[in-house]
View 1: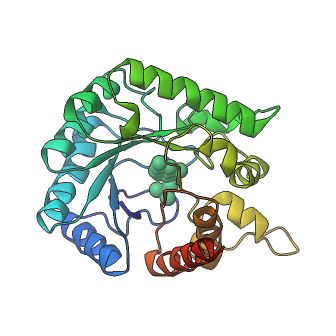
View 2 (view 1 turned 120 degrees about the vertical axis):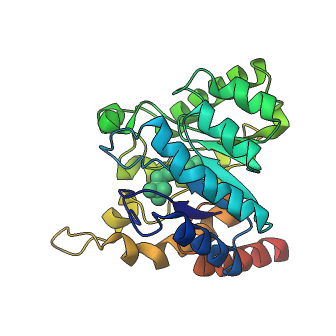
Length: 265
Ligand code: PMM
């Protein structure tokens, strides 16, 4: 899954694909680089981010979804708003990716159920402006699995068939670096929920933390792509359904190698 953030302020690529034409060209480049799916978002969820208003989110994302779909690209829409999800589905989106797992907008789950598309349920404990204060866990893997299981149950109860649900541990969302690392190591426990797992760790803070120099200074976001590709291989080898990344070609190769090794064992 390649990422097109149609935002001025996303943490690693904010502002780079902010107009429709540039965003569409970038989405096509991601497909040419090996992406099977392009995730289009109009709202940044970086730590501390404040919310964009609904009209602006629609204006940013929907034309990009429509144009990429018209080019034959499989598009997912990254949104916490039911109205944006519904308009994106009308414009051709094949999947809805909600970082709040349906919690931010009570109309989201009914909208996705009505739209008949798959839904990515990410582990989420609250909006970005204060999510770091919620990064408190005794057993992070156990708690994330239990909280995701509750979301899956609620969504199935609200009309989304279980076979349309994908789960995501939400790396970096109300998680510190050590939590993210434990969740990557514990991917098997997430898979025990019986749903495909999406892992989105591209360029994130915990990679910066691992790669920090002796003074503790992390490399900039774009300096984390080799590490992202390595982690993509680990996730693919551990059975992830998809990895969501900004730099596609390296990850596409890494995933291919991981699959080749997995099928040789
Ligand atoms: N992270 C971001 C945005 N969307 N969607 C899913 N399913 N999982 C994530 O972890 C996730 C996401 C924030 O990162 P970005 O600024 O790189 O898009």
